[in-house]
Image (tube, rainbow, N blue to C red; front, side):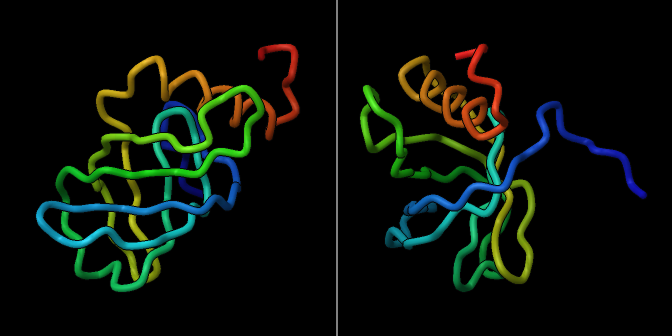
Length: 112
């Protein structure tokens, strides 16, 4: 079995999102799994995406946080059903809700 190459393993989590790449139109998508470092999003036409910068807008289900979070990311993998993104330049405003989301899902509320 291959070893995990990520610093922070991703956990299954389906969230509504929109991805925007270059000059293309924003495309609706859904997250399949997420971590504090990256996310895999399910999107139509995933094979047409190539490595490079994107903006990901995610609807976050957290109380006391802005419901919509924007992340700058890099496409690091494109598969048949989606793309793997590595978060890039994530500021505190987006990173804190991301940490809360991941730790809440992993049942580690003592870290919140």
